[in-house]
Length: 431
Image (cartoon, rainbow, N blue to C red):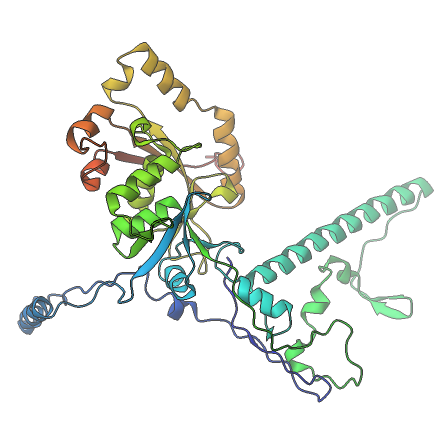
C-alpha cells in the first residue's frame, strides 16, 4: 500500500551492546481520521421525547449562522499542471501529506502509492531504522516465492522416491510422527510440511537480541550527517485534480508558464484536451471524451463515500475502497463502458458505424477481466455512462469560444448505470 512505518534513529555504537529499537506501527485511525479535505458540521440529532433537543438544534444553527465554521483548509493547497505527464504535480511536502492522509489522493512519483521515497532513502543510507510497507511487501513476496520453490522441490522428490520404490518393488511405509535421526540431529517428519521460514519466524526478534560482537558487521551503514533532499512529488490524475478543484474547492492549480491560477472552466477544457493522445484543440472535443466518461464515474463513487483509486494493476479502470488502501483491500473493481442510447447516435450510417466500433467488446475480454477479479477476490462492477448528443451541450453550456460556462449543467446530462458481475463456477454454484 505504500504506507511507511514510523522510522526510528539507528544506534550509532553497535559494539556497546545497545538493543535495536522495534519500529512501531502507525495509528492509521488517527492519521486518516478525516476522510476528506473538507469538514462537515451537522446539526445535533432530534430526540422526540426530549424537548430540550429542539433548543440545542436551534442554538447550534444560530451559532453556525452567526459564526460560520471553517470547512476548508486554512492554507490554500496549490499544484501545477504538467502537460508532459498529463497530470497535476504537488511539490510541497506538507500539501502532499494532507492530500494523502485526508482522502488518499494521488501517488508518489517514486513510490507505489504513498510518497515514501525519502524514508526509504534514509533507511538505505542508515540514517533511520525501520521498514516501509513497500520493503515489507517485497520481503513477503520473496518468502512466498521461496516457499513455492521449496514446496515444488518436495513434491518432485516425493514423486521420484515413489517411482524408485516402485521400480525396486518396495512398499512405502506410512509416515509416523516419530522423529528420525538425520546427520546426528533429530528431525520430525512433520517438519517437511512446514514452510521454509517457519523456524525463522519463531526465532527471537532483533529487538530482543543484544549485540556483543567486537567486530563490526560487513554491511553496516555508517550514519552520516548528509542532508537528503526529497526528490519525490505527489502526482494527481486529471480526475483527482478536477474533483479537488470542482467537487471540493480545496485545490488551486497554476499554469507553470504564467504562474496564474486556472479557473474551473479552463481546467475542464484542459483536462478534456489532454485526455486524448495527442492532445486536441477545443474545437475537436467530443461528448464522449475519455476524461468526461472517467470523471463522471469518479465523481459518482466519490460522492457515495468510496475511496476511488486507479485500477490498472488489475486491468480495470478504478478500485473502490471502503475506507482506504491502508485499512483493507479494495472490495470492487470498476470497468467503464460508454453507452449510446440516444436516438442521435443512430441517425446516420456514419454515427452507427462509429458507435459500433466504440462499443465493440468481446466475451473473451470480459471473461479474462472477470477471472482476474475472481482470483484476487474482488467483485467486478460494470458501469455504463450514457452519452448525450453534442448539440445539447453546445446549446446549453458553451459560449462563443466553445468554453464550458456551467460545468455542473454540463455534467448533469450524463447518466450512470452500474451492475455487479460475478464469475459462475460449477463447483461453487451447484444447486
